[in-house]
Length: 320
Image 1 (cartoon, rainbow, N blue to C red):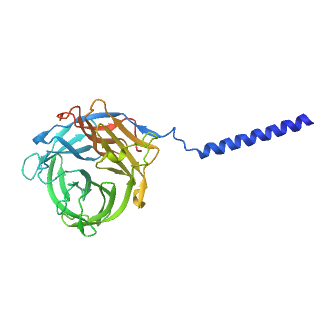
Image 2 (cartoon, rainbow, N blue to C red; image 1 turned 45 degrees about the horizontal axis):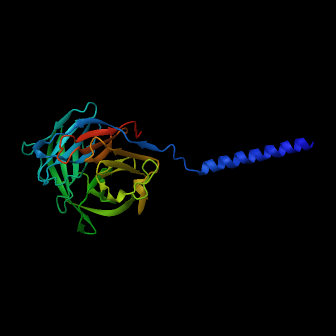
Image 3 (cartoon, helix red, strand yellow; image 1 turned 135 degrees about the horizontal axis):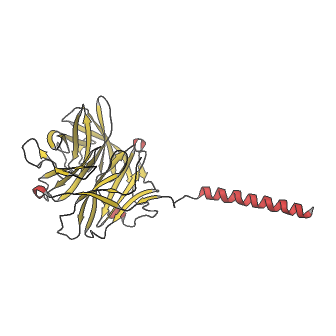
């Protein structure tokens, strides 16, 4: 009888121990399953037409991705179209004058694509203030035309922007998400307007200091340069660069975001390049067909290297 009681007590203790162990396990964050991507595939190398050697804005469509490069004094910009399926890359033509460059895109820091009434457009943020803050291009195949430009204002003051994406459209308006540094703004335009003012409102601010990249914070992350950004399904993908290191942070629930928001601790991307030790700079990112995370780069293996800027995607990642 005593032996049976002892066995019963031992069984109860063991059961209690298992329950406590399971509860403790449920309380501990599972960081071992964090999704981290640090390898990539190069699909195309970008040339330097018209002495435009600096990669800037980048946009992703369903069949093609589009990359903008500028010259050193920002007086010329060229646009390359790269086919997603095979990397075929074409220098686009300026249909307004027959050249292969534009003189009005400034720094051309970010690009977003949009179809409106069956026609195709690019919106480019220039990093300039005033009436050329945002430029609208119409494109047909490998030819583009300038059809509009806009002023961006915040609190009635001209505001340059370094990033732009479209979050939605309706029958009357296009709704934009724009950024300057780590502060994001919301604004809109009439659907078919080719001029006017976008009066933006404050949206949210990105916390990067506490962002985890492969489970750890980045000690000098405030020294990383901000670039353009990608948007899909209420989520933004934010590239940051320091010398030969580029990371991409991910932030969710953008439509309802306000104040300071924090990066997803379980999804991050990083390339630390030994092949291009002078610079590996992700300029822009975007999701193609709900799947791969594509990006464009400035890549240098020496200060005078201008031969390796490219279009790429992260291996193994799928947004779907």
